Length: 375
Image (cartoon, rainbow, N blue to C red):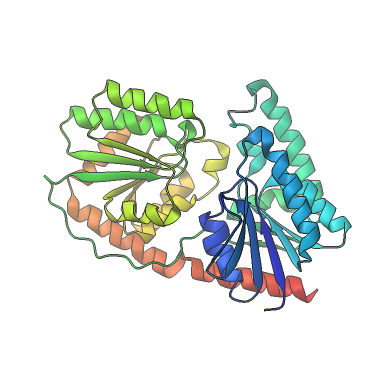
């Protein structure tokens, strides 16, 4: 356990599922691991990972976090520095100048994601995306390793020289409580868990709920996750109140990762109705596999990759994510057929256990680090 790994982020919460409970916890079984991430505490230890809190900062104050991380990296004397945010690329370059080993963990296709960032003025998004794409690829060639959270992300890094590995964001192993067949007249619980935003179908989900309520369907929607802006939450709550959906929709805001699974246990249908933008069309989002792990039948956007996955695994249905009427039609098909919901949930869970769980990704991560530290 002599090797020390310094993991850092100034964007993701300290208890981020991928960073803490998957990667850091897996590495801590073999190395000394420190995680430096936003949290309102100085120090705590989880799963053998030593966690040092960074005072959470708003976007325009985040350079303060960069400075704090810079000072901590200088003192750390770690064997590897592993960062998760593109805005930490300059710090990664500085560490390389000092001769340190640096790993860049790519969570998204950032050049594409920039095109839909609400905080960037729309006229500047395209040029910002082009400039960032050029700089990201040039800088990444100087690091010691690249990790990709999705198979398609590496396509744009094919000219980068460092060793690369896909560490897919499959769910952790967890014990699933046996699901029972619900009667048609019982309330059917829908869930969406993740960042609640327009591009992830928040508005269409509420419009769908209004349609289902108008048809007298006994259904409840749980929107579980943080909002990128308070104004969107206010807009959604206004819609709920204006359409008398207060008893049919629960908006939780951010919850701890462990708490999300308590919502999964009472959910009957998992919604993943992201809009057809480039980053979503070419990615298999983690949410699909989390629903499978929880034994929940899925209703997802009808993107080609997603449709093929659900058809192959028999884990759910698809619909046009921009059409609440079609979404409502598919939900009604599941509401009216409890046996189909149970069958799809079991098929999804079987696919998760065979192919889409974290244990295989953990082995790849450990192997990647062993080779990196041999050099």
